[in-house]
Length: 612
Image (cartoon, rainbow, N blue to C red; front, side):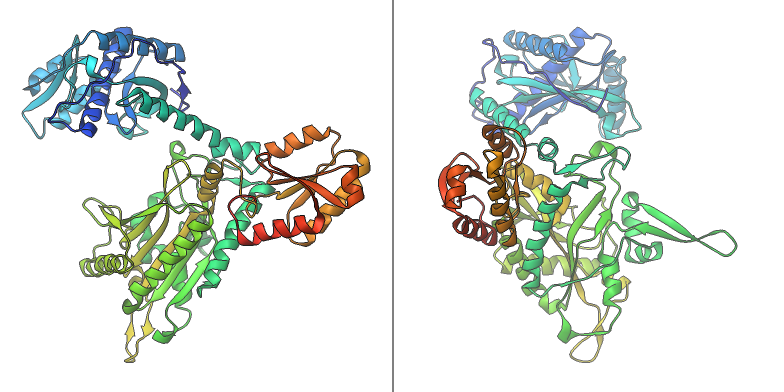
């Protein structure tokens, strides 16, 4: 089964089983969870009716519905999905009761003797218990820990959505199964709203808009996960960089540059080879005089150890701290091909990366400064809704074994967030391998959350790499390092911005801020004069001098989502003006060139979110 997904496009019919009020002892969220779990069982029942030789995997409830994994004799088609959905509704109307019970491991092995994936699960679960749970409705039985509605008629409104490839247990070395997804909500209104959101997300999909607006491209020849920015996409990125540079320069950051490769020995000392090597690209080996391999070099997956090497170039006094190194270098991290997704999951990424060297006493104040910078940046983009998570070490993760350093760092970062009045939730097991971090989750215009900024506290790498400063008592001490990225990566954030604005960037970000549209060839000279005048003021303005009629040129400008169209005909040439049309349809009428220039310049300089 290919990784591609298809949408069944199946409409809900009049025979939709209706949801009922949940029992008093079960809250609404739990009842919805049970409906979704129950629907997954009905899905598996129906698929085995259609493919008796099929093998079944797992079928859990998920945030928007449910899914089930199958090993089937052929790929499912949209027509199959329509038939499966029809049969599911029929089974639900039959009001089959769900019956849960526990049976012995031996009986479970016998019941699922022809289901190899279930046999594997039985082997796993039998290590912890002599009995296993099963749930039966109609002729279908599944391994199950419980959590169902009472009968199939109680399952709420649903719709099967798509089929995708999924490796068994998420392991690419195991069989690839067909995963059938369904959406299910407590009411028809909620289900309809869910699909309206999906339709809007498809309209805003940055991969489609990036192609249509000629912002970026990918090439199989260059390689998967390596985005190539076209001129207009590069302009947007330059504006993003210009914004963060201005904000950082005003707050005492210094820009550095450290290239793209570094010796493996650096990453060994920092701890990255031990904890991060699975995503690091080896670059090359030096050759010894005897022809053998010498030092290994790696493409940089992050800047922190190199910035600490820069810090060590000079012996610093406590009076110099905080010392803030900023860099915009492209980094390289291996992501599995199935995880790549447009600009939001890539293998080459450019961070607005910074490492701040401070004394322990400066932690709280400096974290507050970073938090203020974060707020300013996202408010500028018109994305003021965000929340924080405090990511802590936990069981089973790759964390450097230094309990004292961890204890201090966790306490210090938690205290800094508290002093800044930040609300946050704690997440164990999500810390960086060298320290705790505060992760920022930003909501876009559709209410989707994206993990973007991160503020990480590190006492371990600077000690490993020999970073010191001379304290006020003359002693040499190890600085604390704050690792900090605000956009995260420019590539990922560009993808998010495209979807947030649906490709209609505010004027300050727009690749083309205004376009002059001459109605006839005799208006070309004035159109070019207007554009040249605008460009001298630092505005990005071009001229559509093609052969199409005016209305076609206007449609082309609207398709490219250009904020302002300046239409020029006989009256405008005579009055030395232009008729101004705002993206979205507003017609401001004829305006003098200096008025237009002043209006656009003010919008650009203020970084206004919407055109006037």
